[in-house]
Amino acid sequence: MGNILSVGIIGAGGIAHAHMNAIEQNDNIKLAAIMDIDTKRLEEAQKRFGGRIYTKLEDILKDPEVEAVHVCTPHNVHGEHVVASARAGKHVLVKSRWH
Image 1 (spheres, helix red, strand yellow):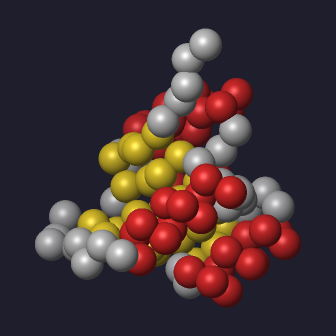
Image 2 (tube, rainbow, N blue to C red):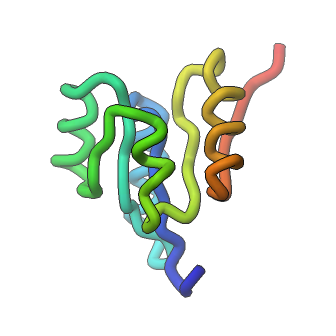
């Protein structure tokens, strides 16, 4: 890792925009890529925030520039996305709520 952490966002819905806004405000992080299965939402996020876009989880996880991921998907798929990201050697940021 260099001085600037290169991250990918998994999920491009509402909470992802809060993460991408925060990344924009931080000089030590850059957005490298965004992944979502909804191409319209994905393209809108790319227009606003930049980065490469992917529609498959395995593709963003293969991106060598992505050092870490923010998991911003629905809670019911967090486990799958976190485990796959960790297995791919990525640092992972995820927030789940417990009921």
